[in-house]
Length: 207
Image (cartoon, rainbow, N blue to C red):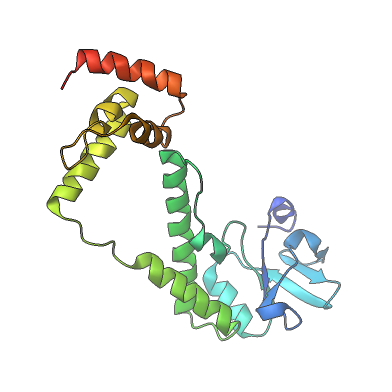
């Protein structure tokens, strides 16, 4: 990759600068001055060269040698702890998990190369990866079946989800407010639209 190719990259972090707080520089690749060497820019504040590292192996090798290094766009370890607030779509949730898996793999490789710089930051990244890799709590067969039916209902649309949600796992009938709130987590609808749907389905599929 040439320096021209890197012009449009948002290198979010510069690492291993002795003048930066906790070894992570607040500057981005765009803030740095170009040099005659592709993939190398210069910081006018610290008067240090910064090398763009496409791979975690290069990142650790140059970082251990005392050089300032930049990580690729989208590889900030902070993304490992990112959470989507509000009502994320299944696609948004899936894309975040895929991105986090890619970032975790990049940093896992970096940690396996035994970085000797930024020890506090590296330890925090290791903890974030360990936490992410912890197995989910074991669910009972009944809970797994309920989650499977819920997932299938979401995929099949609002009608299927309403019919699934109107009865709680305990067998008791749920109230309209709870059903509407849970449906709004997956589908965009007004309460009037919900009521129209509910009234029609109750006539077609009475309990």
